[in-house]
Each structure stands twice: as structure tokens, then as C-alpha cells.
Image 1: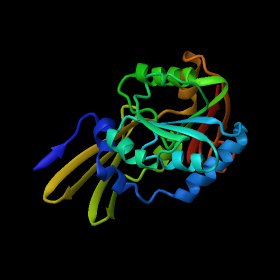
Image 2: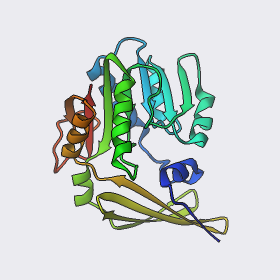
Image 3: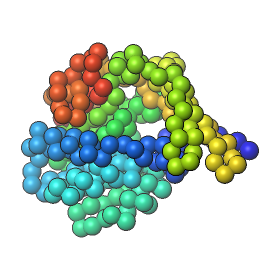
Image 4: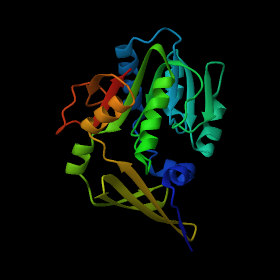
Length: 243
């Protein structure tokens, strides 16, 4: 039996297999990034941060541990249900569609680890940016941590096999009509699964056009989690600070 999915970001992210495949993400690197970012932004003591598309809350938990009031929001009900076990008086999690305004304002809104560009329609990407802007208070900063699409495309690994927790994942990567695509197939307990990740290969110029349409001002760009200067050919990340 083969189980397939169509609307990938509402299904794939809501499965335990997504977290299995990516369980080896570098926690230390994420913490260094959060330290560098919050220091650069000079956020107020006990500042309010919205971690938008927070997943199971790894960034949210760390931000809270270093003194911030954090709200984690994600479309995945399973991820939020898991994250809620870590809630306290200054850390909360909520199921939320990032295309929609959250209804509160924050000192910062973080959208981390390429959690943008999933949508089939450009208006949804624009609406997400408008929602982020509406979620910022007068002195607040927006942050999008995206892949450097030019670097990713230049260094794309077409096929890879990765075994995690006794599950062998077969990965195929390609570019299709402006999207960077990853096909994921594996077998678990006698059932075959096929998922696909599709992310728009936005360049800095693409973001600049979206920011202009959303009436957002781009303040700075960085190319890695140490906040080194962005280089279109060499940087692995595209980190954008805006208001």
C-alpha cells in the first residue's frame, strides 16, 4: 500500500517522519544564531518574540531560556501539541496560519529555517509578509532566515539515501518551474510513503520585490548564522532583517 500526499506543508510537517528525517539538525548552531540575532537586534529585556512556523519549538524554547517572552505558532497541530508540554508563563504555543495576522504585536517576528515560500500562489507569500508587518510593534523587527537559493541550486545533490532510526529515506532533488523540489520516499511497517517538499527558489531580488509590495523596508542581509555578510555565490543562508 502506498500513501501519498498532495498539500505537502499541511501533511508532511504533521507526520512523525518529518521530524525523524531532520532529527540531526544542529542545536548548537541554532542557539548560536539566536544569540547573535537577539544581540544584533538589541531586543528589550523580556521582549516579546513571535516564532512563526515554529515546528516543535526548538528555537522558541531556547529564546525563552535566555529571557524572552515567546509565542510559537505553526500550522501543524501535531507539532504544536508536542510543543505545548514546554509551555510556561512566558512561553506559549498556538496553531496558526502564517498568512493571517496573529492579532498581537511583538518586538520581533522570526521566520526561521526556510519556513517561507511554500505556497502555490504568490498572493499567499505576499499576505504572509503583510501579516508579519502587522504583527510588529512600532520598534519591532522582522526576520526571515531563508536558504540562499542561488547557492542551493548551484550545489544541488540530485539523489541521496539517508537512514535514520531504521527508516531508509530516498531523496531526489530538482528544480521545477521556479521551485526547489525534494521527493521523499520510504517504507515503514510495510507501507510505502511518498512526500514532496516544494519551496519557491526566491532570490534576494525576489524578496526585495515582495517587500516593496508589502511596504516593508529591508534593513540588512546576512549569509550565515554568525551574521557574516551575504554573498550570493558563497553564502548558504539568506537572512533578512526588516521593518
